[in-house]
Image (cartoon, rainbow, N blue to C red; front, top):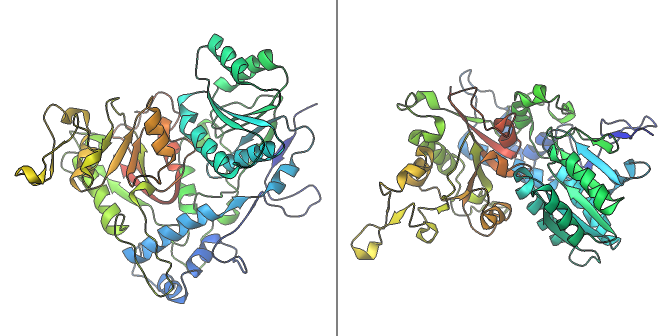
Length: 471
């Protein structure tokens, strides 16, 4: 029998309108057609008046305070929207083998988490498989979320690294698998089909739910679920994603446009914060250095984060007491970058995180100013962009492949207030309110593992997108 294909296109078999997700946010009692209009309305009539006032022909952005409000609101909205358990009832028949696909921000990770919790509630064991570098961080993130919500459930959830030579993979599965174990593979790659055949040889029949955006052809025996409603990427981010080559190269599913329209009479910020674009070619050293090596680009990004978004500023307060602020840990920096393996942490505000082999801190008590000084022997391993961030007092943590502690910090950003810098392979499936995408001068230049690194990084954004473009 052919595998069933289930979609969230908005129509059920009986002709009634359905959605795979439910909305929970700032105005549950009465929502307008556009979710971002509801976000803006949550700030009251004053903000609405400011947004709807006519602007001069040359003015395309609102003031920074209002922009910060929209950034915060959009980020909170993405966190509050969620999938419902009822969506699993949509999968008819045997759900032992399910593949979830769709563009970014459509709830694939949420589905895996909820399915895992349902298995744990039944007393089954769940195994999250790490099959390649690209699903290391997202697998850890899903495992963390499952553990947070499933502490009192009878089943157990384990994280299993299987990015190993083939014989070792079988041995690891045999040693770890239990009779009732269910398997989850987020952000699957082409390796899934190979591992699937090995699983069948080792443990026979099994339950497996996998997800991917575009890297993995769907095995014929799997029930396919296509998600197309954007749950976390605001319309302005969706628009940027649809410009990326991955949408045509890999025949990406298109977003359902029901929530991607700008309400009449409102400025673009109501579709999410305006995309911040920084042009590398306007800087003096643009011809000699790529974007990642440009000190001035790093400084400009840092100033936008600190001055325009007020990241790192003290908490604000007003009459309704709702003023939280963005943190540096809400910022992700990635794109066309290559990081040396020796990179660790770098912070100008907290000298305890500065490593001696990269940044030398001269203590104020020893006659120095307490400022960081870059040694000649250490500075070559740092890009000009990172130096620009450091000089403008943006604390950050560099996440490199193969460092398990660093990856754990990437998926648990609440512990230390540092922005995260990582190669695209490390951030697949993760989400941050503020995402900085590093471009390149050479349009043909790309990381060998990717069809489109730009696409992979933009997909992480739930609110403010910053594009540092090489042209």
